Length: 562
Image (tube, rainbow, N blue to C red):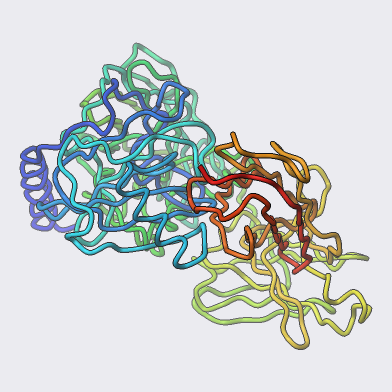
């Protein structure tokens, strides 16, 4: 990177950080903020876009607007952020509150009306600016565990006008942190054609010695040619044992900066490029993420603030080098790693291996491969780079191996319907065998002549059949029950094979809002939603699975309107 561009980036980030300190945001909760996840943390196929704030293992804590503004968006889904609220502020920023249990009375009434208008629990609306104004410190919602949450907490985000996630700690959201980042492993990678590290052309794990809480020193390594460094590390904040992400990583070679990334802002559109930032073959084997401190040509992330020769290090014979890594959290706690390197060309004892197959799949090109009766279709943007596909047709399926290469956009597995018994075609899907040896549904579509599945995962795929309809079971009542003293009507629903696609409920022929909690497999109805006429009422619940199998539950209950 030219010096002038480096200087411009440094000035830009300095001005940006200075401006951020002027924002007067309050904390979204009235308890000390302890984190189970921080901004920019490495996740599967994406960076974590906010702070996961612990709520003492409870639901129902008051959630406050961090600044004046108005409700810009309300979204309720089964997965993702579950019940989520988006507030736009006068300074142009957007605050996001996810995994909520419920909203305040005014917002709850607004969204309930919209759900009844649309006749859907899952909904996304964009209120007008004047409809739902909020004041800083106003209770806007209550914390929960909705959506794709694995325990009660508040997911909190800040976004800019481009809806890029921003690091909330740079905007006055305070989290106590006096702990240094912790280094787990350091790796060296021969990158060039003739490069080697410790007489190996494969990844080499370095031997580390911890000198104190802020300094690690590696044993000396010998190297030649172009090499790269990989880092496995995490950070912790006070009062938390969760392994969270790093804010900043910087690398110097003999005192000269050659690499730096900062988790200050990123784009959702490019978040999937995280797979180019980590050692993906190592991750696919171990499920451990090693950050590559160099940038591949197909890595389009915008988190890098300093790069010299893309962070790759050229080692010459007869020269010594000191590689210094600086790992920092947002509070400024820093850990150093020193790696001594002796430039020496030695006999290679462990040569690199390239597993070649007859099937070279090229990036940037639509391509199809036939493994009768299956056809694999790779889209133009399916891949980051070329790779050799390993595929085998089995007696009752197909095995796919991507040799540690990440898939950027899903590939298609296509199977001709004519190969299936006509009576079973309606119930057919393509599934993937999981670790327990069970077939699990993969997102599939049927066309006139074929069955298609869409996936990014290697593994064994087979044709499955699902003709079994979902199950509906009342939880807090029985048929012909008297429900005068009930606030909620509760039913359990589940589908053994492919999963729930849709559900609808009716009382006396009128649509009712059934709130779905997938983790509990439960539907709930609030009797305060509608005024019932008379004493005897007809309940009807219809549940459909992903293959269209449908179950209808009907019963009579008795209830007087209070």
